[in-house]
Figure 1 (tube, rainbow, N blue to C red):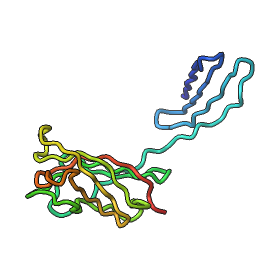
Figure 2 (figure 1 turned 45 degrees about the vertical axis):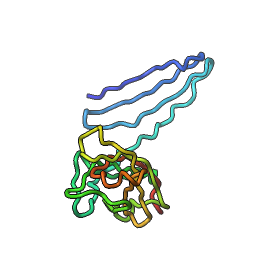
Figure 3 (figure 1 turned 120 degrees about the horizontal axis):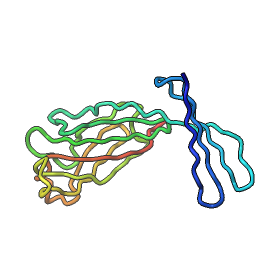
Figure 4 (figure 1 turned 135 degrees about the vertical axis):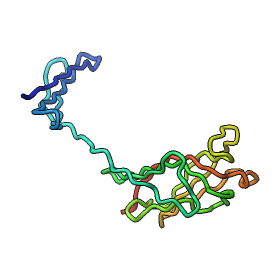
Length: 168
């Protein structure tokens, strides 16, 4: 038994959009088609491109670091790498520019990349949060530095989310 769904959406200016999905079974993910009505004519049906979610991998942390709530990286079909992590140093504090993780080949940036993240003295304490610069270099090394160097002695944990274009 197959089934189908036809959506009809108003574009708000005398036009309509139709989307059609026809399935043969619950396990089958069918192609999706759409066409537009401009007030006098319908366009031809055209297939909508669908993206497959990228596979996520565990981020390889430097020795002496532990994940607090997930450390992942992925790359989509457009060569965009996404890196998210919530990590802390097992003992001591994070020195300015210290490498906290390394991305493998194929997931490294085209050029130097930096973003602002959140650093903590105590991993789950909101009162000790400080802005941190997280940097990724072309060899895949990810490092962090406090934005205000006088706070560097207080950096023990980092929460970050970033994306960039991979090399090649």
